[in-house]
Length: 410
Length: 90
Image 1: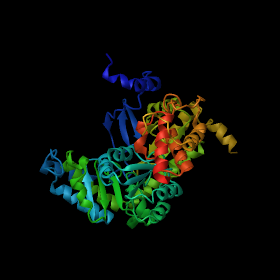
Image 2 (image 1 turned 180 degrees about the horizontal axis):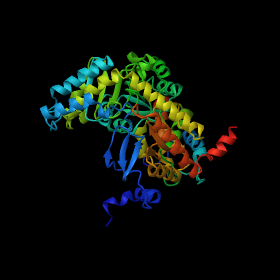
Image 3 (image 1 turned 90 degrees about the vertical axis):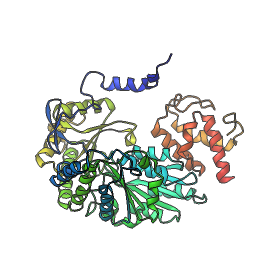
Image 4 (image 1 turned 30 degrees about the horizontal axis):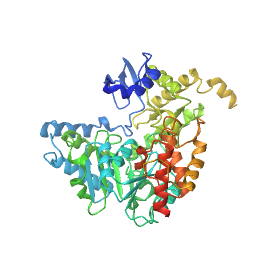
């Protein structure tokens, strides 16, 4: 008789062939102790964290910690209920009010994670007669959300507004609404959407709406950290913004904001909102405080971008192939999966944690050593990252030896 | 969709599907109605995406992602594509 788990045999084989030799497993990392926003003990070694998406370093913000402690004492460890049952406390409503004021929008809904926010909105907002036009490089939560819904799903080429236009044009005769789905910053390579071009295309079609997932850009882009729409001055053209509290906001949870007058109806229709427990009061309280810190976090954004530029130019100068423009995500492209695994292990053994990202979760089927920077990284830490990348990259032959590179550049 | 994959589809659609598919045939197998995308052509998600986009552009149609899980063979794709062409341009 076949075992239930036989169907995972190819997965097991791939895992064994990549990491089955007893070396450090990139997918089973344990943080023995978190020392700060930028350091943890991993395998008995003090390690620089350069892959946590903790862009502004707010995970230990004193005001957020205090708010979380107070809420924990006042309201307990959990709500034990859904938002539509017993899981909406004053804190949840206060956080939604804070989101409205942060984004200057009329409506906000808080979900239990960013993943659930995408699942909720994308599976519910559009029906069987409608169309979703999604950027091909969208995150797994977007793919899962649209699959869970009933709309017809069309992909357009990554960051290609002309391709979107062509695809919308083909659907022009069809009844039904069209929901365009993009991301402000794409998580794997850190590249931004060409928002002005996409908005221009959207505005050609009366029945088109635009949703942007700002998971990686809230806190990072825009004068007040409202993400790519704020940076581009196009906030009124984005109908729905989805985001997360688990990156710049430094805790966990997700949200969607909109000016659509009937937006709150989603509360009665989104299954991932109705059928899961709400966020615990301590998380809600810290998210609210941290949103305020994000709003006034201009200095943090400057430090973050300073770090990003330093890492990007340092790695670039060493001869690494980098995946995108300068952004808080700096992705080093490894020549193949095996080298990627060896590279990741070289880094972790030298006290550097980054994300190893493998196909098919990556654009162009790249193998990526994906770094994300933090405003709390010191320049010394960034320089140490560059130094260790250089050592490991040279040892593996990914880049020429430093002396050779210097000679080549004169 | 017809019971016999690929049967009854317009010859123009069949020719267009094969024309678009040819450059994606990296394994060099002879393309028939029974050729399977995953097993015979080693299609992964990235190739599927590029191929579907090329097919949409070649025939000026929209191929929703929703129908892809039901398509395993070239013949099934020809049938599904034929149906879309009839709906959109018929």
